[in-house]
Length: 66
Image (cartoon, rainbow, N blue to C red; front, top):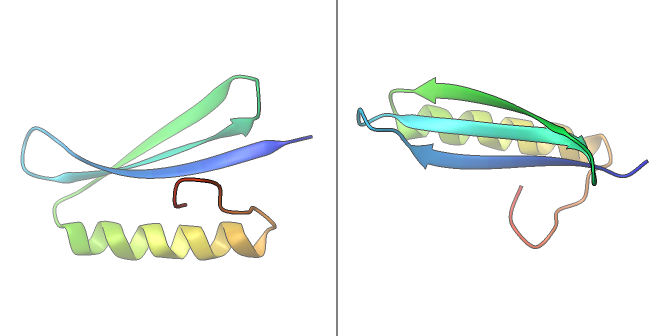
């Protein structure tokens, strides 16, 4: 079973930052979770921690960074 996990950092309309996490099976439906942060530094820390966790579980980076 091929699966994916994607992390994106986006700006919101109120000056904050949103970490968008998307995961699921390749070719199937996916799930999306959005976490709102007031500062980009907190988003970067959370994103880096999630990336390390997923790499340890066997996910491999694709064309775009995890």
